[in-house]
Length: 285
Image (cartoon, rainbow, N blue to C red; front, side, top):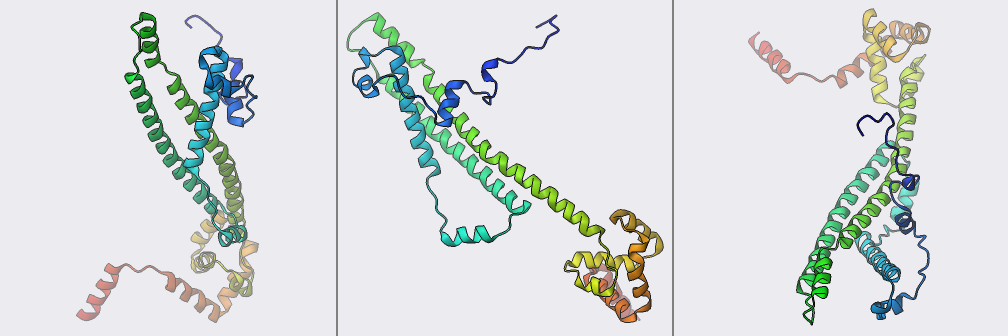
């Protein structure tokens, strides 16, 4: 509002409800209060029911339809005892959690598409029934009622409500997985940083390293000049007293030196153009 210094405050009715009003929150949580009337009697004689009773009946029908749709949409799935045993024995990592998140996202997209298809069919059927509805008598009031019924947006509001509940359930399942993945990722980054900072003090410790990448990193350090060594020490947070024992062993132990040089040759990626040029030079000479 022009000239106003105070920002517009949100409506308090939405507080702590994720944007849903209380009636919808109760529906989503399953804590729907019991109907204040006999719904079977209302369905049998709707002409004698009050407006509130008709609304109770409509809400109950919509809840049942939505539950049936979700059951058909998601179905039931039991992977089998072997798959469950394997899942329990496998170690959870950020990579496995990322796979679960991706799979959940793909499944949700497909579920939303299916829900849209069902809603479109329901809307088409509803509008077709309304278009074929005609009063048995010629009465302006009855004609006005049918005209209003054709413009009724209750079914569209129901579609939006059901879709919101589906999305809310999806996010309620997704957010804990994302938080768990971030936690594992932070642990893995910290562990990787700790491994990067470790430098073996002897040949025996070097051979005990299981990671080939770490061994290659150490080998590159041992075979590098002083400038490159200083740069690597800054990058991996090594200090001279930490690296000097293995450097001394490398300098005075010829078999170890040959092993390090062989390791680097094995992982070297040769340029095929250089290999072809060397071959041509050899033939020319």
